[in-house]
Image (tube, rainbow, N blue to C red):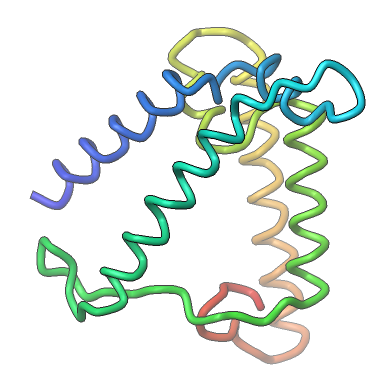
Length: 152
């Protein structure tokens, strides 16, 4: 049942990204181009997503198990540190240059184009490199990642 619900949720999320225009890199870069021909339409998508997220996290925070009975594991980290800021800058830079972020890139793979494929391959390579460097860092320091955020 959990696999079916994960599939349905992923499908709904992907369809929402397609309908909202988040899978169109030109629309995304138009939204990020504040000094040029700015397209504010994605702001409505973001405000809607934030609203849904606020309600969902409030409700989830009051539960100890999910609707399907799995233990509820919400993020616990709340500190803003150097790693978070640098990671956010890297994410934003990649989003602005490519016009994709991870979810829309994966949804765009269905289009069969080379751009989402190249972006996804580069994203996976970056994730693998990060994991490799994190393991080396943790091994050298003799530590384990802290709870709440892997590798924090």
